[in-house]
Structures are given as structure tokens and as C-alpha cells.
Length: 196
Image 1: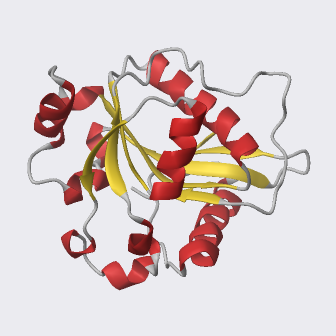
Image 2: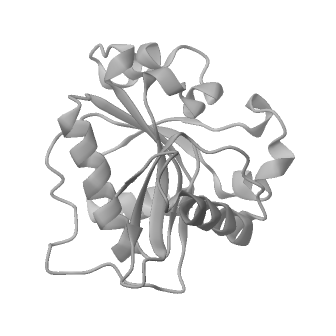
């Protein structure tokens, strides 16, 4: 579900994201993007959530880059993208890999509906490994250096998990890696986190 700043679920989704980063990394997440996506369990509690940024929001992952995002994408992917073609996924937390799939489906659908041509995110080594195993197409671009952001101490141990800025060349394409519809998101004691 799309969770904007007026949604009644907004406080619970924000708390879920902040608590996930605090548990995993000891991080203290400040403001979150105006647009969030979430997947809820049968009881209405979030099972997965992430922020979404478009051109007008600014791209957090660009902080780590030496050149504008569209120039880095051209260098990495070999084709031009306009700035308004990018969709950035940020501050992703999932209670289990199974909850991640419906969240990705919703975000990819949003990309299709808005004609977006390139996804960007900053992912830790465990999340990149999961994406590779699941067949999620992405291109690692550059290691995310903590000195590029203000107050890196707020991110706790996050940077010890080898985060990289990554591109997804076509987030509007069908996601063959996504979980079959017969499977449902369910709670788990494993957690996956991504920041951006």
C-alpha cells in the first residue's frame, strides 16, 4: 500500500522502519521520504516497508556519487536517462524475504504506472546477495562511503555491512523474480534492511 504523509498508517510504518534500523544497526533514522510503501499482515501491522523518492524529493543515494545520478547511470548502463526517469528505494525493512516480494511488486507497479526507466538504491552486502539469489536485476555502481553523509554515527554499524549504490536498469519491466501470488507475506524473526 502507498503510505503518504496523510495516511493513518503512517506513524506505524515510520516506527517499523526506524525500529528495524535500530535493531539491525543501532541506527537512528531521522526524517523519512514523503512517500512510503508498506505491506501489512492480517493484523494490520507492517511486515515490510520502504521509502520512495522521485526527482522532486532528491535522491539520497546520489550523496555517495562523484557525479550526478544520470551521468553515473549512463557510465554504468551505457544509455542515457533523464533525471525524472529515476525512482529511488530507501530505508527498506522487511520482517522476512517473503514480505519483501509484495512490497517490491507494489513499488515496481508504481514505476510502471509512472513510466520510470531506472531504479536506484543503496544496498548492504546481505541484501545484494539476496537480490542476486532471487534474480533481481541490479548493477552495483559504487561503495557508499560514510564520510559522504552528515552525521554517519547516526547510522550505527550500517557501514560495516558494505553498502553499495546500485541501479536497476528497468524497474518498469515485469519482475520475474517476484514471489508467486499463491504465497503470502508472513512474519519472521529474520530482518532485511536497506538504506538510501
